[in-house]
Image (cartoon, rainbow, N blue to C red):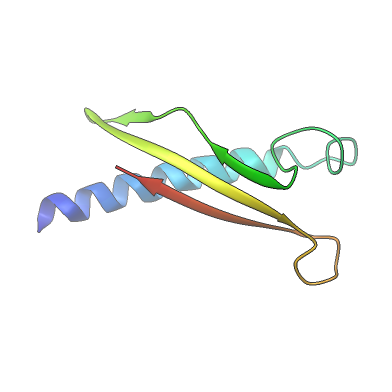
Length: 78
């Protein structure tokens, strides 16, 4: 239904905002010691969009492919 589609679009925008914020946190100083990209699981404060609450959660995995990268898996639920 249309209601589900609008929620999915809102969740996608919330997810993009979270990923943009995480990307902006990448620095040499924060990569292995502090910040939001330390490996682990995180639940963020719910975000209100149009009177609906969206809860972002994400997991950071260190070095998933041997390149010293991070893998971020993001889920936005409502």
